Length: 373
Image (tube, rainbow, N blue to C red; front, side, top):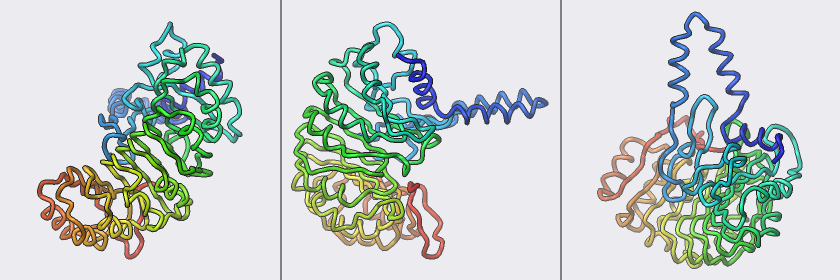
């Protein structure tokens, strides 16, 4: 495996080296307080651990999957597996089943066309038995080539169950900058795939598909295109249990309307759905009003309308609509509810775990979502 590949792998997985140098430089300028600086660095190194829950099994804050330390924010696990670092990849006979394996389709540090992804896959399969790999994370500013290349090599990855396209940390690349492509080929080529996570939506495309094995489908985005939302609603996903969409804002391509949600909210192609997240939307009040009468809600265990511009108007729609007392969890964190309305929601749902954390200050008519750029 090339030295360049390993160098870039280490930089992305463990965070931005530039941030590390900046932190080090800042503390070097204060030599008179070495003891204090060492304490600060130690505290920073363990500042905020990642949420122990898997975001494919629960709805957690946008930053919940990240571990924050002196290297910045980075994800240490995916689909319940640690992400393999360079020491694992070059180690002696690592067990392919015990790690999520990283591949590059682009360099987060400079402009590129994603060339070399196929070579990177060949390098990985030269060291690791692809027939036993269960999880892959694709890193880079552009991950548009990965679906096609992986689909062409599906016969070499027969046990692949989890795939993350756009496994990029906030310090390295803004979510709106990540280039995606057509993700349909991976669903068509991997009929046993159980989980697909997509981060970023620039250039993202999806065609309606039928996939019997998929259990978790997540789109992390600052602006999810309406045609992608419609394609999910037109798909047949009989095994899907967790669907999560960060709808985002129009400025970054989030042009989905409540009409685009019709297929999803009807539940006709999603008979096993138990957790639905329509998050991070600037039209969250309209989404809430539509969800309030949606057939799919009656069979949900968890509903997330968090991270968006939800106000008392949207909350009133939820309280006036179909009963939500059957839910185990209602996630409304990052909201613009008044204290009185928040109290009403809690009172109306005494047996439901309601997350009303991160209340946002209302600035006249301007309200913002948690994740956009």
